[in-house]
Image (cartoon, rainbow, N blue to C red):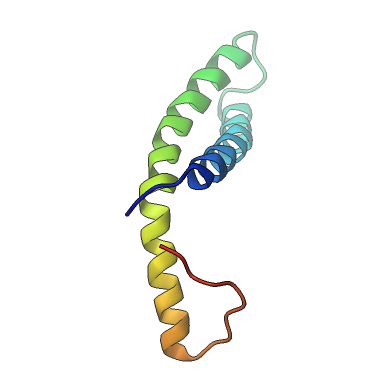
Length: 84
């Protein structure tokens, strides 16, 4: 599947936001607010972001295509035109 600029922008924004707050919460719960909190959180966030972005870019469109096919197969109403 061809990845467009808009997919890059949306996927990057989603990955940035979601990995930021999830990694923040997990580091806060597991390590606490220590003197090294920002360093630990930054490292954890970077690892999570590097893992999330390719998933959103390459797996996301496949899931979207399969979801649209399933919805159409079941006869549900779709208001958005499906594009590949």
